[in-house]
Length: 237
Ligand SMILES: Nc1ncnc2c1ncn2[C@@H]1O[C@H](COP(=O)(O)OP(=O)(O)OP(=O)(O)O)[C@@H](O)[C@H]1O
View (cartoon, rainbow, N blue to C red):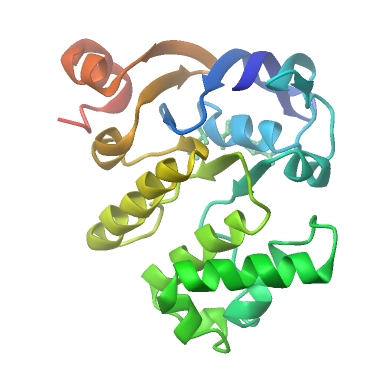
């Protein structure tokens, strides 16, 4: 399990997360929803080691991840896919994938892993020497996901994987995310597109004002009209 216990953090002196606790299980998709500014991105940044906690703990099973720098968090098996995917447009598909292996121990291991992923993502293999900026939107998202998998993460943190995508690509990208579950990867995903995210999520949390407001299954959430309308603008209706 990936567990956040009583997280408090923010920027400068401004506290953004006040006391947030969440759990994500392997092989499951845990979705975090909430109004704009409720602290969702701040939460994933803190889990990824990009923002230190002021209080609270982050655990990966029995390992304490609290206070580790981002590369150490990746080494222990928790990888962030930032908003927009974060691929480097001037670098080729192959170069982007190799960067995903920066925490692996040897160049040989990186090459093996990159080749495995090229086998799994044939559209990327066909375009391995093309600059990522020349890929279609859907291919860029595939590249972002494949790059995040190079380090063999146990948990993937996804910050709004559907942001900026056309409706067709939103569905395609979230299907690809759902497919990762079959590999046993645990997903902690922040999403604004509630309707599509509810199709694939196993467990949902709602943050409001940097604090836990609700948690349950997608079915519970769909049944709770009041919570949907109050906090999510009935977006999943
Ligand atoms: N780098 C930063 N410096 C200062 N304040 C920040 C920074 N990043 C975010 N904030 C503030 O922290 C609060 C929470 O932001 P965060 O991005 O975590 O929310 P969110 O729930 O992900 O919102 P959205 O859905 O709009 O992306 C906001 O008030 C935001 O203005």
